[in-house]
Image (cartoon, rainbow, N blue to C red; front, side, top):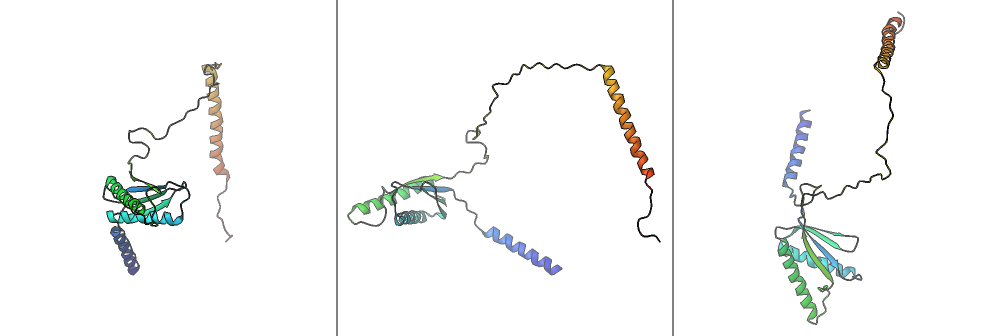
Length: 199
């Protein structure tokens, strides 16, 4: 029994140690890569992605995640200690170098500056998910009022007199009293005996 307990404790300690050693870095910036023309080949897309990845690696980016949205845009999320302005500068110099290399006369397979647009954004985490930055609600309550209701409805109610109320109370008391007496008499009518075979 103690060996099972020791073994279970050892597994829990190792799991906690492994969880503490894992780096939990969440992406804090993202790049939106949008191609200017609709007829882009998959090789050009791959070359653009590798180009952006190489530039991000030179900056010192980690945890790069690429996803494609429905409208053909690519979103590259990553964790970086540098600011958004530094990342934009690094990516713009890389795209200018590609643009100049393609205009020198040698036709390289890398996409030119006109092929795609790059936007860099910082991912912000808000502590209050229901409110925006100005403290206003992000959603709006829509109230539909019934236009045809008439709030001036006259209700004709007759007021009960004290004699009528007293009669109702006396009838209810008599009914409840007879029910209580009937419930008290039932246990005396049921015989108490031993269940089981006759001895």
